[in-house]
Length: 122
Image 1 (tube, rainbow, N blue to C red):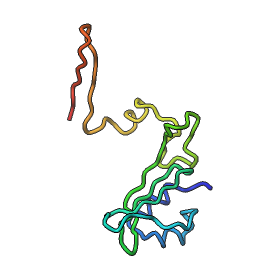
Image 2: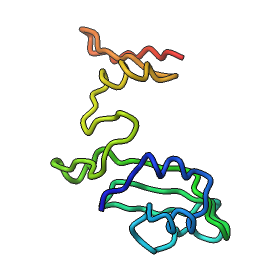
Image 3: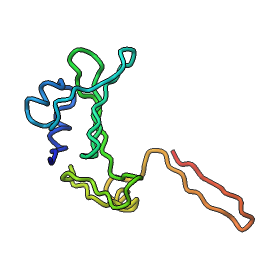
Image 4: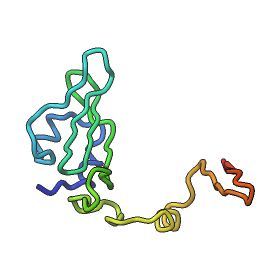
């Protein structure tokens, strides 16, 4: 089943039950988190999506993680339409051209004497 990630993003802060009633989650399994944890997770592995909810009675959506790569499968491609103009394959250059550099990044190199050196930019 395809999941509309953009619609899910617009549900941030809403309860699991509200999201389920809108048909945005294909499973009826509730998010799970141990009683002593602040977060409850709902992992849709086949869809490449991890949803994180507050671990209370309402289970409000607080975080969405998209798995764009699966280290165990070399031919795996994110199975849902990509949200917000993203593409299934995005190189580091592609991301930086559209979104800019990360707030903190490092440029690393090795010299002829095999010294590994990194410069960290803030």
